[in-house]
Length: 311
Image (cartoon, rainbow, N blue to C red; front, side, top):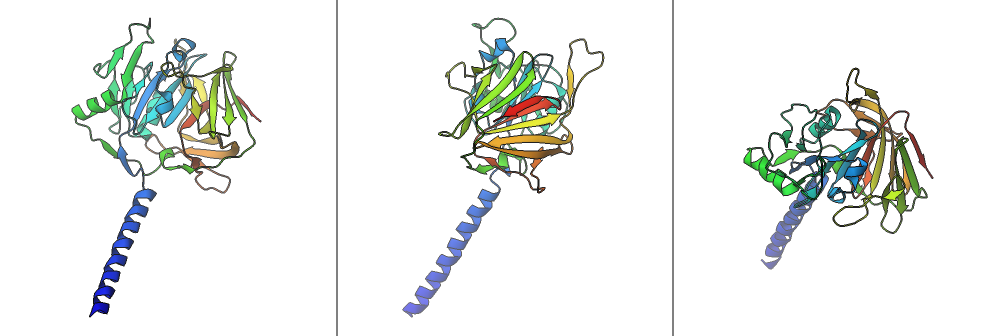
């Protein structure tokens, strides 16, 4: 009799253990399949704005791309960060909003060019001023800031769902922890007035960021801006004919070459984005989707003729 009871107990215990392991494996393999709606926040990056930037180190992914010469602008993707002050918030361009659609994001910006899409919650400050404020201690047009909590709360009040399906894309690919590579410095020359460089720090397995050879720091915490993964993505960039402001068309849909760095290592890859609704995917020489190190990602969208060095 006791053997029968023990046998049933063992069987029930085995079934329960199998169920728990199966559930955990399923959750881990789809960690971002259902997630809170990411935020995509436009951030100014002119010399006047850099000294006031805050919140960049809390972002999961940051895109940097050319706007009117000689400047670039940033779009920071925040997935689960709470109570982060971010800014200075600036205007959008079409190519940034195409990337925001890729993330089904809450798109935070102050005017500018943007796409209309059911997949994006368009929180333009000119239409919805309440999640934003002006820092009166900063003069001019570079003093607009927001808080990630403010944006999410406004999204809920407007009736948009909190969760979206992100089973594909860069957020799912940050599982490695490779280190020990011998590439210690990366330089990207956007133009004669603006260059970016990264210095690899083996102790933290990250890259410290420099703008025109000066350390890039958060204006509030004075923390150095660092990246765990760096992607240099070569894209077609052309001036828009007849545009008096010198605005550009940056081709983020299609395919091309990308150089990826993490852990001191370098990988030559191919990027593919089939449409504005599809994620950008990076493939290695064997045609497999490339994985990335744990930590944040800086994606540099650069013209195809841009010079980049690494050693």
